Length: 189
Length: 135
Image 1 (cartoon, each protein chain N blue to C red):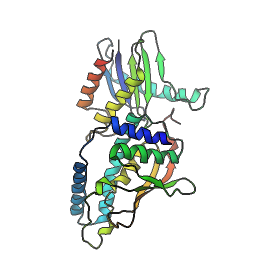
Image 2: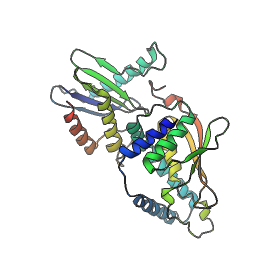
Image 3: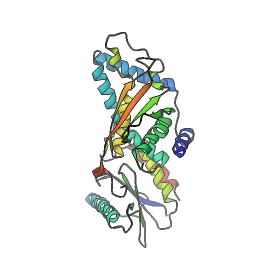
């Protein structure tokens, strides 16, 4: 599977346009802050909105990943995890989260982030319920949207975030709900 | 010589983009393009089923005395159909380049609605510029 890693690195090095990461960090920060203001500190709603925004991004972004990498269809969910972590996150964010905590049935895994460009400068507001906010929840939505387009229905959610508690890792749990067999285009099955 | 026409089909087989290049092709009734797209979509699906080999990708190229038809399908189910003359080589890289332009100028256009007809001026422009370089 080291091949997947090299695909990710190759694309990152030669095929993607780069921007200053602080531009992204600050833009994302202002979006989240605006949502928090708009929803009047109802963090559950903010989480939901971020997930939805990510989902809509994921639906579109997957095509670029496929176009730029020419990756073949994943044979199982473990391949999918590798592709998400080592190609997807690498080419779009230049980070490679660690894959861990596989469930016995190989339908759930965790992505553990040692670094997170989105949360570089973030301290959560001093509100009693601020810990309800999953600051980087857009990731979860992107994963869900992108995988849906390749006919994998998944649930993705944060289980812990270093922004909330620095003693914890930043971890997203991804669970395969089902393979959307009916949606797989003929010729791809 | 070169690429004569490009069709893009959404995953349901609906025609979302069609453009002829050069003037060697006669114009068809707009409904005819939809029929062609729908028919080829079905034929492609049928060929995956009647293949003697399991896991066939289906129809990828059809040759006639006057032109070739190439079908490239992305894993998301989007299909690119490329009509070229028979001498055209390097179809894989042409298809890849078109897929690339599609992912950039269609999918990343925030005002493009997924699965709907493509009316993106930039996509048109960059596609035209690229195709004109294909010898």
